[in-house]
Length: 337
Ligand code: ACO
Image (cartoon, rainbow, N blue to C red):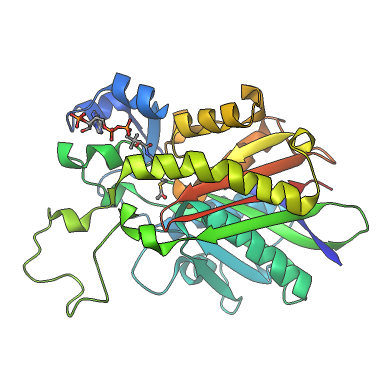
């Protein structure tokens, strides 16, 4: 059976760096609070008044990944785009980005699974490759959060966390007997907790998607989060779902070279390390620089981990894991060829 191999990666963030001190000028918050509660020091936001959608950042990241893989856009059999912040309500970012890559018939689909979007995308790519429906798949995670955040004190719990960014990974099916590629994947969702982290408008369930009487600064126009609930769920579910994938792959934690978790909060990932009794250097962190880039967070972290030589060598094994809005959560084990 074919193995799904990561050929290359690319990433893109907008040029505008927003530090915690910049946020202090917009709302009642402090560098100390943000660093202590989340580990974040800065994030990248699109410049005010610049038109840039998730598909634009995704296209930039994809061009880098494609060049490194030695693929032209025409070589792609399938595009999978994970985002919670699509450029427009529809059509999806996969279609929009394909056009920006100069394509006009390549199949493209969107995944709306928030922080676990890349895990769902990777697993879907693997399934397409193993089923023989595609052999070269471009998986992208991209978000523009900054244009949809409440930048007043009212929204500070959510706004300080999120950053814009995108990353792309070229995945190819290869015939080999080597145990490599996606070794295991475990995906979950529980919509009973949908309101723990959600953006209500625009809503197709309403007679008018954005009701006439909703002013621009209405809280329903901005994401709301029950941070404590998400935090507790993450700390409980991540170790469980990591063990689930280990069991499926018949592997022990000592065989994982690096854990690349979703970058939602440094404290969540430190708690994960303590629970699993892992030294800090076994868990990859880059939330300090980017904040939470949601569907882009795991592929950006993978891209940087490979660039820094923390993983990517032949036979290296990584574990991806994440939990976020949905709720959705999951993990995946990948072994380099
Ligand atoms: N600056 C200063 N004070 C703040 C800020 C801020 N930015 N935000 C909240 N506070 C205040 C609160 O108002 C509260 O004040 P009070 O005690 O006077 O009421 C106090 O700080 C403590 O607030 P908590 O919400 O209890 O703070 P907590 O330690 O829980 O940290 C946080 C909040 C960082 C949001 C945390 O709960 C968290 O990280 N949760 C998980 C986030 C997550 O993983 N999200 C999922 C991924 S994202 C996705 O799926 C799209």
